[in-house]
Amino acid sequence: MLLINDNELMEAFIGGFAFLIILWFFRGYLKWNWLERAAIIFPLTWILRKLGMNIYKYIKAKHKISDTKFNIMDF
Image 1 (cartoon, rainbow, N blue to C red):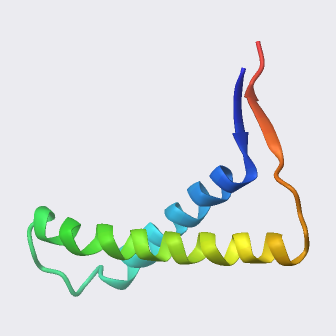
Image 2: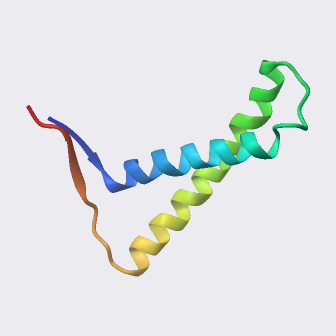
């Protein structure tokens, strides 16, 4: 059985969304090779993910919402 909690699930969604935002924002501006683009895109995605997770955890703490665990595979 593989368990995942709501923090990990939200981190995946926020990280993916941040990656798409950064790619969309820089789609026509960066005419560099893939390594130079990755050097810019990865840290920006990481910062947005951390910012989003801090906001998520703040909202959970403010409203006293407990962690939820999800069963991904149950066989």
